[in-house]
Image (cartoon, rainbow, N blue to C red; front, top):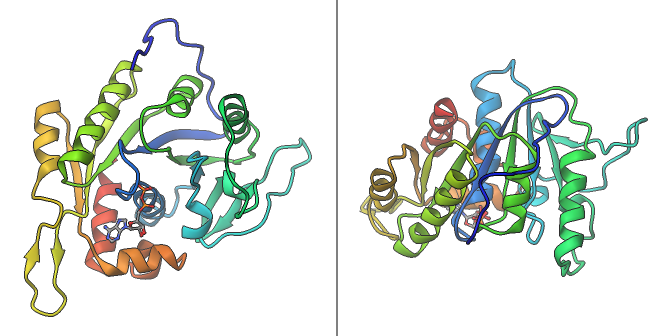
Amino acid sequence: MQIMSRGLPKQKPIEGVKQVIVVASGKGGVGKSTTAVNLALALAANDSSKAVGLLDVDVYGPSIPKMMNLKGSPELSQSNLMRPLLNYGIACMSMGFLVEETAPVVWRGLMVMSAIEKLLRQVDWGQLNYLVVDMPPGTGDVQLSVTQNIPISGAVIVSTPQDIALMDARKGAEMFRKVHVPILGLVQNMSVFQCPKCKQRTHIFGADGARRLARTLDLDVLGDIPLHLNIRETSDTGQPIVFSQPESDEAKAYLRIAAEV
Ligand code: ADP
């Protein structure tokens, strides 16, 4: 992919937002949204004085409404900005609040870009210390548009240890480097599965692939998240693990990652 690193349009901060952290992945289905949700909750849990928001720009497959157990449409403020929906102390905005859940999302080009413009510029976030942005997978127009429009403090790249996911994670890292977004590090998701009965540990998607990639690219690994039934179940039921089982080892893994960013 060709990216112009010079002559980028001038980035404008989102009003009231101190730091934007984007959560990205090369491939879909590797746990990017799950990580974004739990990272947002973990940032708030690690320091209760910090206000945290979550912005879902995964316009073709928004998962934040379901994972954060939120429904409905945002109200408008006096200045005609959309008010984020709130749950578990996190202010959330998603394309999922703006279109029917069952509506086919078949927008192309300009429509997606105008949706992104709305999500970036027409939300009244109030004052936030962190805005965690759940990006779409890959390295397409949406990612480029977000990186060109707002200043980003850092990117977290999520990958499983599997070769095919790592190949795409590498492309993601290269894109952020080209557009001068600092990469905070990689999260190795689904790093290991421990059988709940016999306790045997199995590296279903391979062992330590993200660590090897991080070494090649001179990046940090922010942490490992195991493949665990509770992570999947709590996501599907809209009770993210950092909120619902904060004492679990899995929640602690997210809390450690949040302490690194
Ligand atoms: P992406 O945003 O990369 O498409 P999701 O976060 O939607 O991926 O995750 C895809 C599926 O995998 C979801 O059903 C989610 O609950 C599940 N999942 C993600 N991470 C884990 C994990 N560490 N353990 C178990 N299930 C997970």
